[in-house]
Amino acid sequence: MNYRIHILSASLVALFLIKLFFLDEPILILTIFYILAIFGGILPDIDIGKSKLGKKIRPLSNILQIIFGHRGAVHSILFAFLAYLLFLSIGFEAFGIGLTAGILVHMGVDVLETKTKVLKLRIISIITEIILVSLHGLFLIFIGFN
Image (tube, rainbow, N blue to C red; front, side, top):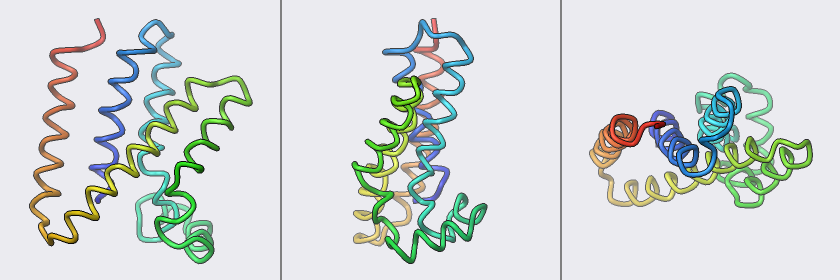
């Protein structure tokens, strides 16, 4: 899937989690949570040099791709859990939840991508992006942060 869909999906889930569990937190915590969730949405593609993130840190990306291959170790529940434990160990559990949520959303979106590749329907990707943008807008308009 393209990175925009990963970002939109992670953003939507982050807003939902903020609304459900973190609304009483200070705005700085919410902002960092949101940014980490979006970053988690693109982080698993660090293992491919052609990705947006992979291009920014190509040497590391190439090493990860050689060692693990694309959709290897960084596309795993273990990786998501370790990301959570890292933040938990330094006392920032909410940030770990944000990053982990983004990683898990990324993996879920990749499952959808696999299905669309089998069907060879690029149009599904475009429709998915339109739906996610619409849901994101509706969430902000109707649910908001009140």
